[in-house]
Length: 75
Ligand SMILES: [Zn+2]
Image 1 (tube, rainbow, N blue to C red):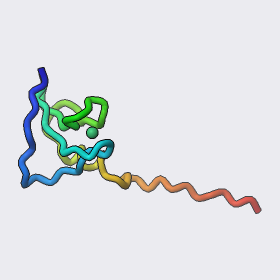
Image 2 (image 1 turned 120 degrees about the vertical axis):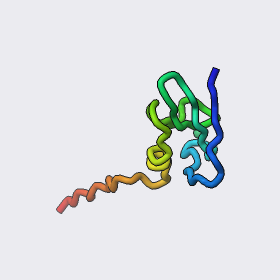
Image 3 (image 1 turned 60 degrees about the vertical axis):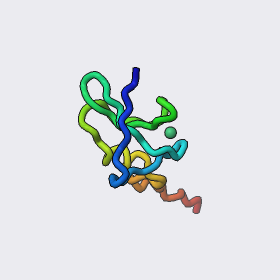
Image 4 (image 1 turned 180 degrees about the horizontal axis):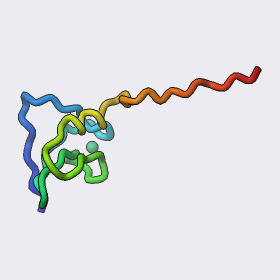
């Protein structure tokens, strides 16, 4: 069974980008991961240390990498 741990209210967490839920910490064999409490298929961090920074990075509405392609000009 999943062992979910609530993240303290004073710690800033981005809401899940898919459903808006506040993430939880899951205690699994081998460590911890930060995941969406509603759906296992939503983003979760790698198992290991609690990595809320990684969660926040991946759940930002605007992706951290500027991936804008410059449109090709047909001149
Ligand atoms: Zn979610």
